[in-house]
Image 1 (cartoon, rainbow, N blue to C red):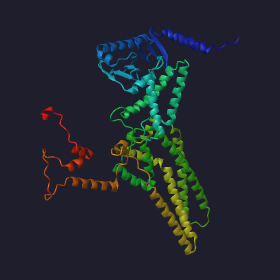
Image 2 (image 1 turned 180 degrees about the vertical axis):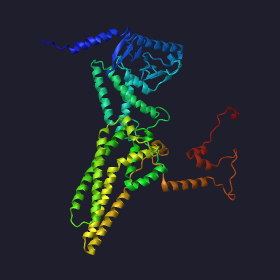
Image 3 (image 1 turned 120 degrees about the horizontal axis):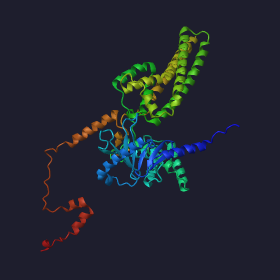
Length: 531
């Protein structure tokens, strides 16, 4: 008779029961929502990810806790400055990956955390206050043993999301809020769904705490970066890029002979995704998507030019110049197609890149020793499809133009074609010059640096001729202020304090009050004066 397989659920329950029996007294095994395990001691309020089922590890954890606790008992001011009734210890032992362990005491109610300095020979030499981002990371890492969440934490969570949603709705481009509109809506939807389950009696506290901790950790890191809650707080994130040096500008002039300046556009777009050298992930992902669209369009146009050149080469009577130019146009079009397909293949899976991938992409080249120069190398490779397409258009234009002049036997026809080609070329140049600087250049200073105190508006700094005229007006104003009165102009003597003020003067200065004083002089209320 064939043996039935054992019941997997029963086997799992038996294994879990066996593991629970190995847990020392006072410790509880907790399973995180992501599946990881940590242990919590309800008596001493200790949290640790170490496996306390082994006596040696359990003894090390308890020894460290006792050392830190004795130190805090000597520092009585700690308990007066940290009056929390839900404080907990988190202890992590050293490991092969992390040579130094860590220890901290935190409170959800006060949203505070203090970390011990474990790198010194005396691990309890001092304790340092941690940031709010570290508090929320603690909430996200160890939420399962909690039975309730302090109301203040939920208020902070919803306030932060409401602030971010408002800035997104107002379409503030350079907001410091780290999430986009879709993410913010998803966060709010998950929170409301969990609150509905909580109202019907479901224990969703671990999931709710983990959700808020993961979201608020990133928000608090952004707030810390931009000095939230201080006098130096900023309402706009970093957007400024550094100006290219003279060496990079000279390099641009040389490379522009081959790439028509296309590489400068790519370099600026790459630089705007990493202000101050730090990649901004939403902008980087949008840039990758725009690259894919551009290369798809250039491939389509290049394919059209290949077909046009094949048809042109089939025309009888073309000379060697026309044939050479058409063949060059065909080769350049195929180069544009091949490099465009390669770039699409390389970048298609990077539209959802993370921070590490974005940093690696933007700092892949480290040859010339300067950030802009190294980024120029990457921009040159990215601009090959479009630059090849431009050369293909020029070559095809040469072949067609030469054929137009050769194919017309009459002088009038040649003149008309030459004039037409000249008009088309001039129109193309005029269009390029018109759109050359039609858009605003990338910022080289932060938005707060361009804030006008007089108008409370964010305005661009005055540059060029307007800046020169403004300096001339300022200089003239300073000259007018420093002018001394002429000697021939008599200066009136000051009126003595005892002299009566003329009625006209009082009336001019005080208006109705002066007229009232003229008709109704004030009576002194001082008794001494009455005597």
